[in-house]
Amino acid sequence: MKKLYITISFILINSFLSAQTKKTTEADKLYQRYEYVAAAKAYLKLIEKKEANTVVYKQLGNCYYNIFNPTEAVKWYAKAIKKTQHPEIYHRYAQMLKAVGNFEEADKQMEQFAILKPNDFRAIQFKNEPNYLERLNNQDKMFDIKDFEMNSNKSDFGAVLYDNTLYLASARKDSGKKFAWNNEPYLEIYNLTYNPDGTFGTPVLVNELNSKYNDGPLAVSADGNTVYFASESLKDNVFFNDKAKKTKFGRVSLYKGTKKNGKWEKIVSLPFNSKKYNTSNPSLSKDGKTLYFSSNMPGSIGNVDIWKVAIADDGSFGKPENLGPKINTEGRESFPYISDDNKLYFSSDSHTGFGCYDIFVTDLDNIEVKNLGKPVNSEKDDFAFTYNKDKKIGFFASNRGGHDDIYIINKLRKINLIATITDAKTGAIIPEATVSILENSQSILEKTTPPEGKITQIIIPENNYEIHLSKPGYTTKNEIVTITDEDVINIDIKLDPIEPTITDVEIILQDIYFEYNKSNITHQGATELNKLVKVLNKYPNMEIFVKSHTDKRGTDQYNQDLSERRAKSTAQYIISKGIDSNRITEKGFGESEPRVNCIRCTQAEHAKNRRSEFMIVKK
Image 1 (cartoon, rainbow, N blue to C red):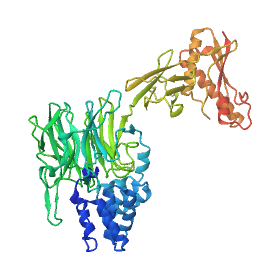
Image 2 (cartoon, rainbow, N blue to C red):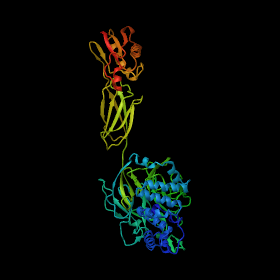
Image 3 (cartoon, one colour):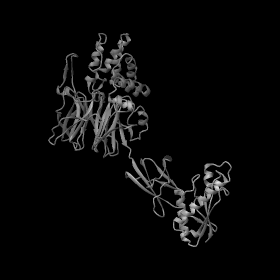
Image 4 (cartoon, one colour):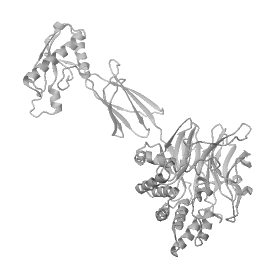
């Protein structure tokens, strides 16, 4: 049913169809009156009679495309493309292939489309990002969704919540008269109560806004006293007369109503409506000064574009403005929704997506179109997004279940976790600490702290988080993250330094390792030697003997020389911190006193053997 509002340009739908033949005349007439269900039956009869040709296959594909039956559309488009070279058929075929989950074949059809229309935005996007599906599937989840309990077994969409009243468009009422497009009842506008406990009341017809034609969806002003809604111009006896088809066609148009004594009245057609084009899907800015809508009016880039128009203080309207090529494409963009923070949500079948209509968002102050990702978007049509910031609930529609249904959106609150690692005694920042962040006991981040000692990570409040920290010279620490209502959580994690152990013969530090074949003091080694300096300052009469060792790699003489250099560099570091050189002696022992007496040593065993030790000569 939403095709009436997304595929607004009826004329453009048929612009590439081949001429009628005598055999297809009856079926073509039904098609050209947009009676797609009846037209499909008529074309199928031609096939049964073995009177089909490429035109019939193409028309059947289009019929099923317009009533969104992708399985049948794929079947007939596959036959049609054998003899047609029209690019839009390839694009539609690709969309329907995505809808049935055949992305590989869809990409092949898009390649053909790109050959035929290389300068088309849709072709350029496809060629620029051949691995788009991997990116979309790996995109961070933005929303949770759940079923809307008040859906009917007919089309329901366009749900928008104002205060405690939810409005929606629905074909649930079967009055006997069917819309020939898809053989469903006509759309009508309903409202229902949104209760404090999150439940909904029973849908009730908004009789003042409904006509005997399709009505809805709508937008309501922030004060609840003005409504803008879509309806058909036939109710005002406005139409264009197609003499060739001997049929009168109305247009989808926008109307305005004002609330008085709880009822909508003074329903008027907006001044930029026309019997030459369609206007629909209104959304009003929070200040009530800008109306967004979709239309195929002159100046459109594609079949359907998103437009905006200024509303003056006296209620008059300015000149509609197209939102431009960063948003609108040669395809179809519709169902605009403008949020309180000036973000535009809209549906498109041409920006990179999972197939058919996906929902996108962009900041109008800095346009960069972003796909909302799963689970909001799917391989089917997803559209009519709205969100109530105060109630923290939103809605969108999708035909993923077989027909248009409304789904409830719960926005995932994301928290910026900032952990700062410091020394528990000195308060100094600790760089190069090993950090592991666990989400529901599964590691999601492992890295070392940068020089500023801070780690940042986006987390969501529904999950549990722990931070595990370790660094040589400090005790390991596990920190449970307490979730708050704040959007930013700052945690100062203090690590306790491991103090030296002083025995009768030795000062025991955390192991001071050297890099392979080097004698320079590492950052880790300096941290431990600074502790030794503190001990020597505390005991001014203490004298020590520094013993340095190597691993077993290299010749005996080379290792002896290397250990001597390591012993000297260790002693020199201590002296550089103000300790009298007379209190320190040093000697290298090469590989003669291994800590691990291994034959085929591992890297870890080698590291343990290249070390320094600190013997107490005098207390």
